[in-house]
Amino acid sequence: MIKRRDIVAIWNVLENLADQKGSDVRFAYGISKNRSVIKAEVDAIAAMEKNSEDYEKYEQERVEMCKVYSKRNPETGEPLTYDEGRRFAIDPAKQGEFDKATEKLVKKHKKVIDEKAEQQKQVEEFLDKECPAPRWHPMALDLFPADITPRELEVIDPIIKPPAEDTRAGGRRR
Image (cartoon, helix red, strand yellow):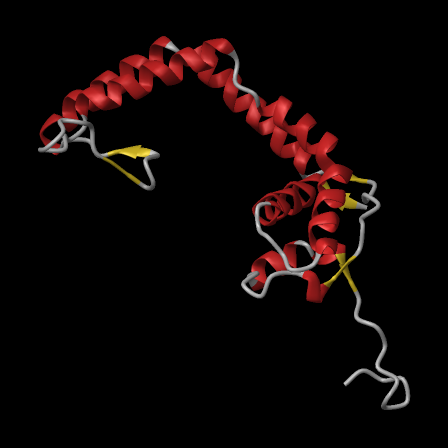
């Protein structure tokens, strides 16, 4: 058995590795096979997380509001962001107005925000449930790129084929 959350984590690592070129065609084949094993499960989870049209409208209004109250790039006049563009840098001089506008927007869309929170709660509960472990296509460790991180290896451990026994020391691994 495996938690669906772990399947999603494995999918994310496989997606990261999918665009890397390896010197061995078995690497590309193994990544492709393992992605296909869990694609339907990951697609089903993504469908569960999909935003409603009403929530998308709220998000559009929220982003537009953030742009109005954000600091501006002095050269281009574009709103400034941080955290890789995921957050707007709100102008401290406009913070009070921004807080009031946010409160008003949240009140206007309270129902859809609450529905999204409930949806996310259900998705989290679903991700924590166990399901039958996929039948992985085992891959030898030496197929993976040298720059793979320990964290990525930890996540994809179920896919990694154990090394062959070393018979030089009476069958014990060194």
